[in-house]
Length: 277
Image (tube, rainbow, N blue to C red; front, top):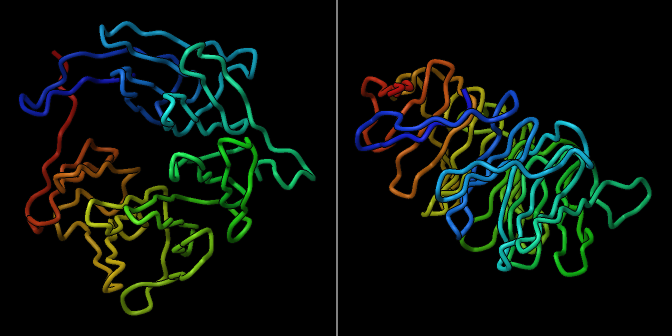
């Protein structure tokens, strides 16, 4: 369908955008209220007046797949893609590619960069198919390669600049670019089975998308809490989720979007389905 502009107060879709490609991977606003839309084929910008522009990327790769985006203090966009890390200069929209190079220890470990997180405005954490890399913005090279050399499923950074990195069967706590702790199970030695989501909330607690449901982790007490269908989810399987600062969570199910408040569990699931007007 493309992109829907949804009014949460009226609980209805008020505008739709037909976007090129088969699926949208991420959307994000810059500080000029431009909405960047990443998809399986194109990189687009929706201006504040709702005009849609497609940035030219055919010279890099036809139908370029992009996953995640962030903006640095100079308003440049940094994007994780299937050909490496992309930098889009704010003033000119010129795109520079930082690719993977075999044998170069300062190059990205793999061309597939699934996620990007800004660290102190100077470095960027990269979740790649071959592990976690730390990219220095000023020197424009990888300065650290941390942890196992395998697919990073998800990652986030908390208010204390601690990195949390999830693989398929474990997640790590990283401080000052060193692994300080790792977890492979929860509850009664129940094995972790990660999917593609990990978010740190404003209280520095973790929310994780697992095959068993929505998992919460408190780093202070190291206590896990699993939310499932019994707590108000449509089902335990969902594609991804968005955590809002007010504590509400929106989970993306095949049936629709599931609004979920962890403080009001064990109630019938609140399902939002698109309503075109």
